[in-house]
Image (cartoon, rainbow, N blue to C red):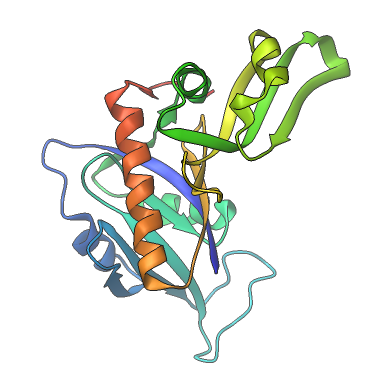
Length: 222
């Protein structure tokens, strides 16, 4: 099992490059490996200096950071072992390129409410919400469950909430597939079995496609 955390990104360019080849050609990037028959790949970023203070040096004497990336179609995704590492590498590797790359806002609140009305595709295992009714006494909370939007408690009080992060899966799955936030944040725990890994990544592609088709991509990062 491997944890990855990063961002859904948008490339504003008339002719975006092949992102796998582009990433593999960046300084420090090594070992590009496509993941089965998907639009996802693994890469390794190596550096003589640690990105974070507590990072451990590898046997090669270099610091190594595993990258999970996706290119083409709905989104470009860049994720590392932590969001902090992703932030630094995106700025270092992509921020100075001639590409216009920005974090993709996602209207999570509308996504959750759509699924609440038509629960045919996805279910939520985790929701983080901002609360409006109780002032500073209670301004946010996190919810966990097998199918949170099926809860009468949530449905009866949903007008009091603004949903900002969701852990989502296909409705037939008991495990969270991916966690997505309004600021384009994305995190997942990727399994070690190849078939399960490809299935999970393909499901994430479907979720991204649903978000885009339903016009839930937004310019706002709130």
